[in-house]
Image (cartoon, rainbow, N blue to C red; front, side, top):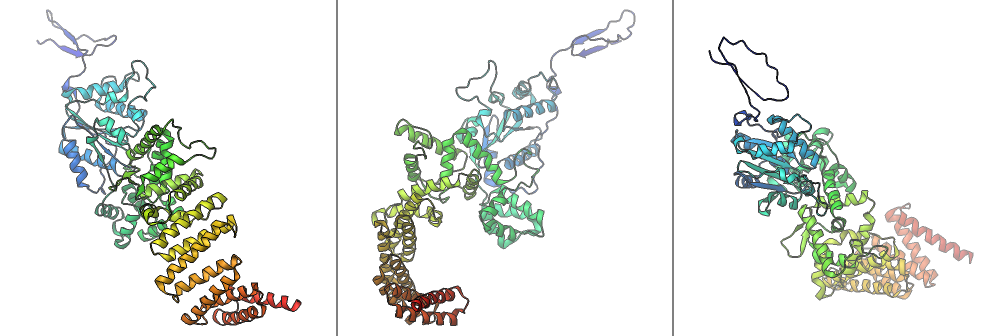
Length: 637
């Protein structure tokens, strides 16, 4: 009779009911305390917490790169880019592809945004693998999983380290030290011949540190037009509109999360909302755009703790930069005031050199010398670049940022009540750096022109800001006049004049300079269009009004008579512009003491305006009221 054999782990007190043995027989008890051998390894599985995406759009260049760089262990690679650019979705797709092509490979998904999430993922892996002691709260799950991963007998594995944005999660901060015996989490990411690691991160620096090389890091860009169209078509199905789609995708800059967000919004509100109406809302104004980009409509294929709105997704990055280095966050806010394309580096450097806070101290860090200041500036730029918020262009010395990043940064400023502070700072820099419009300054003017539009539209209320704004407009007008763009030159000079009259007075030398600039712009128009062109005559009228406000009635009369005669000849007696000049000439005559001539001309103007515009039009009412006042004063006298 064969002797029964017992094999079991011995722990504490084991009580075994002894079987009956025949006389002279023996019972052999074998106790084995060793962990289960390779034969106990479970069948390969995946812990990817998301299902495959039926709407996934293939991005062949990225897939090919992953297959090339992540195919053989012990590889470590990373996908980096803006939040919402599609890094995690690409990693999910690659993980499922790996399971299909290699069923014997384990796939582990580790959320790495915080230390707690990392440890939680390792505990889940230990549980799924049924590692000894996995259910004991005192067991070090990190060490358990690490040892298992290092054992090549357990087979091939792929780990996706998702949202590894903060390098401080994996390595101790410099100078902080760490408790005795504690290992940084990076220690528990083994480099073995049976394992590969795919990292997704918003931070290039974190990705390069975790992979060990920048060559193993791929920067993910927005989708191309074709891919973006495919994604939107899949999201909307039969509600896709060919005509409006291209415009919407341009507005969304082909960003996958923004496209998904727009699709969810449209479907949720169909049929009241459509692709076309969404586009109209998006374009209606900054408040509407912010509302649409800030909506969180839910997505089962994104981490539940992550926002599904573009604005909130990037808010996380903004906050992280602010915590990492305030001066880098300040640089981002300053850059958001520019046009997103072609931001000149020399202007950024100038801002850093000149800007002081309201109390006279440097707004950013304090520096001992110029080299330290430049190093600090370079560090700030590096932080913005490594988070993919700012990129270097092919044009040396210029930077660019996504228009949606720019918009969300401005929205962030608005919420923090800092918008006016940064607008003011930008105005001061532009007023200082936009040069006089001479030929030798044309390159600088050309570089700055794309960035001044929203500054020009402002009407500052602060006296000092108005002075700077007027000087900026004066220089812009000068450059436009030199370039032969006399209409814009006149407009800039007229607005500069208005600002200077308000804060400096009518007789200030700079105010009088603006009057001269306005006259020069008129001279340019006369050369280009001719003396009797309607645009020229309008400029003559504008200059006449300025001279009238200045109290230069003789010059104002000459300009108004010329304008009236020209308009009557070219446009006709009853044209609205002709009647405006008639009204203005009457006002000048009144100031000159020519009461009879003034009243006679104003009476004619009233009659013509009543016939052309009607008795209740505001221009008719204004002329009639003026005439009545003059008549009453004459009768009383």
